[in-house]
Length: 149
Image 1: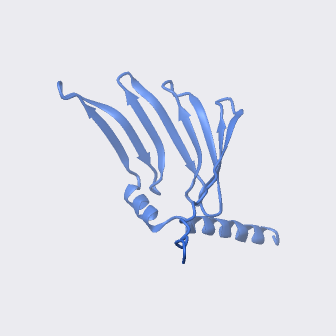
Image 2 (image 1 turned 180 degrees about the vertical axis):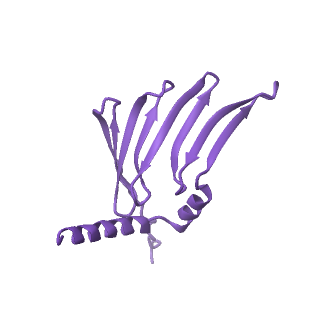
Image 3 (image 1 turned 135 degrees about the vertical axis):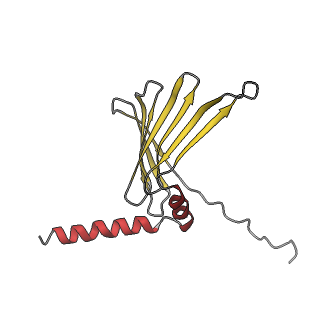
C-alpha cells in the first residue's frame, strides 16, 4: 500500500504537468469540436454532383480521432489517432484504400510540449525510421556599433 500511494501521486503529477502545457486557445478549439464530424464535399461545376472528399471525426474531448480521405472509387486513405492523457498525439496509424495499415507513427515529446522523437513502423511492427526533432532559435542580429563610435 505504501508503494501505491507515491506511484499514484507521481502519475497524477505527470498528468497535471502534461495538461498544463495545453494553451487556452487549444482548449477552446477542443471545446467547440466535441463529438464533431466534419465532411468536406467536392462539387463538379458542370454536373453539380457532390462527392465526399474528406471526413474528420472528433471525440468527446474535441481531439481528432479519425480522418478519412475519399476518391471517386471510395476510401483512398484513413488515419486514426491515439492520445496521451495530457492531450498530445501518442500514435497515428495510416491505412490504405483497402483499410490495411500501411504506416504507424509513435511520438515522444520534450517537457515543453514540443516533439522530441517520431518512430515510424511498418505494418508488421518492424521499426523503419526514427525521426529526431531539433529546435534551433536564431539569435536576433547583433547590434554592432557603427565604425568610429
